[in-house]
Image (cartoon, rainbow, N blue to C red):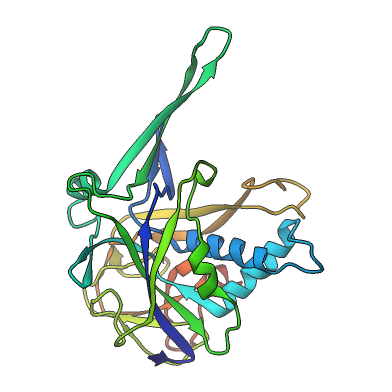
Length: 299
């Protein structure tokens, strides 16, 4: 179906290897988020689309080319976050970490530990033990395959080869070790105007997709906290970028990109509210009076 000038697609991936979406660190444990944030999907799509765009037989060689493609992805696509799901007959059941965090972590999350070696002593280097948490490709208790379910909004007239790119994505961290491998199960036009089978509806014709949430609904993405009446945890949403054209911090991952202070997914709003879906899938309260959203969430 079409909502505004955006075509809405339901996307399902099967998780084929551990997926690590970095969150924070406790001691030597690198925590993983229990969902896939929009920045991770945006980054994976940008990387794949840039590598498709070979000019004169030469592939992309600096971050500027990736940045330009990334801007096109922002202009033409919008994302929800993706959440773990299990297949039940011909449908998929999503599991929300906030409903029972302990049970969710036991069933879906695991970790891998390692250490650097001190070769002269043929032993582990002192103080170098590390452990990385990940979303498991199979449930820990029953061994069922785990899927990721979410939505992509494609702007009318979008000519990016994003559907082809979705077949060759690697998501999250530790990709050099084979992590983040996912298999595209399906891309289908969304049936109806709701998300995740909940009472979240699309409305208005705007430059970005707009969703409408009822009273006491849960936020399903990081949402800019400024001026929002909601209950939940707030965290600074920060990511890393490769900016080779910068004088300082020009290597991969050195440039720190601050988005905003946001309510985390699972927070509860206290009254019916409309939201823009902005860059990286971040939600922002929709201002009905002047129909604007803040510069922080723009290109």
